Length: 313
Length: 313
Image 1 (cartoon, one colour):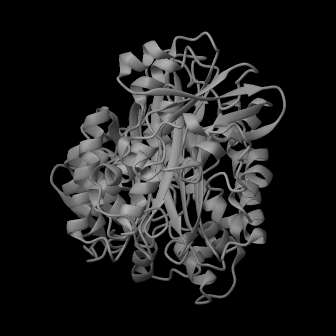
Image 2: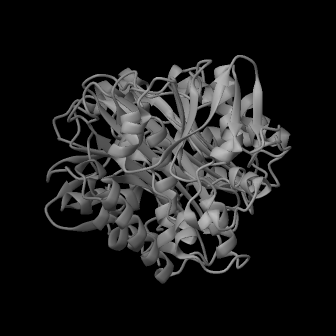
C-alpha cells in the first residue's frame, strides 16, 4: 500500500479534529485548552523488540496508544491528541495496516483522543511505530516521580505481574489464558484514576519496567529509601494461580509492562475512597523513609531484595 | 552506550527547559504561550533510507531538526520545543552518538528550541530517528496549503535544486562542492521569513519533495490550476554551473530536499520588501488560475510538463 493511499484511505478518516487539517498540511494547528499545562510524551514500539511480529496488528496499535496514555495518566493529565509515526517494512501489508488502523480507531474512541497528525515512511528493515501523546492538566497538578516524603506510603493500582505472564502465554511458555494475554496486549491506561490521584499524592509514575525497579526510581528521585512488602503485592486470580511463593512473587514484581499507577501518598490520605470510586483495587505495598535504596521484605519479614529489579535500558 | 547513560550524560545536559523535568519523568510538562495556537509536526529519518550511513552524525541531527522546523516555518510558527525519538542499531556507537548530540545542540541553540523529552530504544536493524516539533502562532495565522486564489502569484524562497546536487556530491557522482553538500546536509528552516509571510500570503508550504510536485499539491488543495515558468527558477551560482538548459532545470525542480518556502500571494503584495528585510531572494515562479493541474512552461514558452514531478511516497 502506497503511503499516500494509507494516509488518504485509512488514516484521514480518523483525523476528524480540525487541528489535523485532514492530514493534508505540513503540521497540525491546535488551540490548547486555555490556562492548562500540557503533558507531552513519546514512546516507540519496534517489531521483534517490543512486540512479536505475529501479534495481532490491532493489539499493537492499542498497546502503542495505551502505553503513551499511561504516561499521561501518571501525570494526572487528560489526553487531547496524538501524532503517529508509522515506519513500515515490507512485512506490513494492507491487511496488517487495516488491522492496525482498526485497533487505533478503537483506542482513540475509547479514550477520546484526536489524531492530530504524524508521518509515514517505508522501506525499513522492521516496523518502528512511534507516538507522541499530548494531554492537559491543571497548572501545578502534574506530579513528578520525585516528591515522595518520609512517612509516605507506597501504593499501586490494579494488579501486578499479569502482563509478564501474558507474554509467556503469547510465547507458548504457559497455557492459553485470555485474561493474561489481554493484560499483556491491551493494557488499560489509568486515566481517570491518575487525574483523581494528582491532587492527593506526593509522587506518581506508571509501572512499565517492573514495580520494584520503578519503586526504586521513585525513591531515588525523591532522595529516600523505600521498603516493598512482597506479601502485599496485588495479584489477579489468574496470576495468583501461578504464584505459590515469594520466589514467584519476585518474578511478578520484576516482569514489567503492567501500566499500573505507582504513587506515594501521605499516611492519612483516604485512598480507599478513590479505589471505590474508580472500581479498581489500590493496594499499599510499602513505605518511604529517610535513607536510600530499595528493600524488599519477604512474607516472613526477612530481607529478600533481588539483584535484578526489573527491565533496565 | 546504555540508554540510561545516553540520556543522563549526553541528552539531559541539553534539556535545560523546566518543561523537560531533567528527562527524568514520564513526560514533559509545559505551559504553552497564552492565547497562541500550537503547530505540531513529526518527521522521521531512517539510516539507509533518508540519509547515508556514513553521513556525519552531527549533520544527521541538524537535518532531522531542520526539516521539522521547516514545517513550522511553513505555518508561520515560532518553535518552542521538541521531543526526540532515538531508535538505535548496533551501528550507532558512542562516537556517533556524541556527534549526533553535538549537532543537535548546535541546532537547538541556533533556532532557540528546547529539548522537552522523547524516548530511546535500541536493538533495531537500522537507526530510525524521529522528532516532534512544537511551535506557536497567532490564532488564525497558520496558513494552509489550500487557500491560494485565482490570480495569485506563486513564489519560492532561496534557491532550488542545490540539495539534489548536494546528494550527488555526497554520493561521489559530482566533484566535491562544499556549498552544495551543505545545502543537502544542513538545510536552513526559513523561520523568520515564514512568520513574516503568514499575514501576507494566501497559502504556504515547504518544498520537500520537489518544487513542481509541491506546487501541484498546493494547486490541488486550493482547487486551482498553476503554471510554473522554468526560466524563472531561482538557482544558486553553484547550481547554475550544472544547469545549462531546461532539461537540467527540470532536474533541479524535481529533486526535492530544498526546504524552501513556497507560497501563493496576491499580485499586489509587496514581496520585494520582505525579501530585502530577510536578505533572502524571493522569486515569482508562476501563477494560479481557475482550473486544475500543473503546467510547466519552458524558456521558449512551450509546455514542457514532465511525467515525474518529484518524490512521491
